Length: 262
Image (tube, rainbow, N blue to C red; front, top):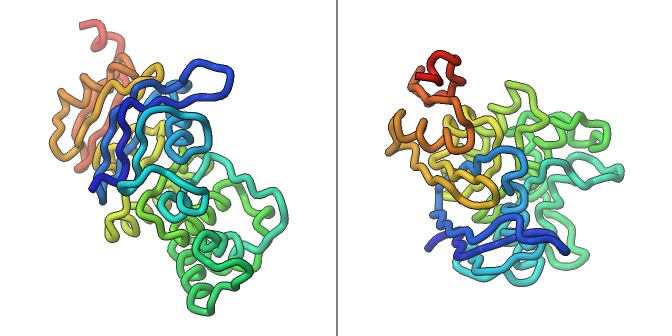
């Protein structure tokens, strides 16, 4: 059963034409898919449409079901936005425990085991020792790591991330993506994330889906790709580039003017 299935799926904002149009996409359990495209190509719009945060049309099935109530959706999909919407003082541990909201009965409190699981997730994302710190006092990058822990606490089969590395330094970018890969891959979660750093995407994703002008223009399984096919596909959205293999990873480079003109 596909974890994400889109058929002729379009999404956008009220009063405008669809930003993303006629997307056909199937993502299987255990896949980590990078959604790649230039600014304004519709990456965030597609993510928001999938989780029913903006108007959409066409077919969207998540874990085989059409999204229903907000509570049911929260038991299937967790999302990490570019910026958190938490604007009030709250301890870091309580932010992580918010991931249980869709599963706990009304007015129920997390158990001791659940609180320990939240602490364990904070340790795994490098935020141990900050359980009682006010979330608002964290840096933007630290907030993203806590929100990742909250999403993992939600324990859904589908995880959506919108530029999760945008506020992170070099080490924490790799920490976040390593955590996503290890915790999600081991449990066959499906991950769809938008990224601007193509080299990071090629290092951590199993597949790249390319978006240009609101439409899909490429779908690449990295285990089956070669330098020529990657270069050809990525030039559709990043002209004047090429891909090489180095250190066990694919790397996209900007061509020198003399190379680009050959």
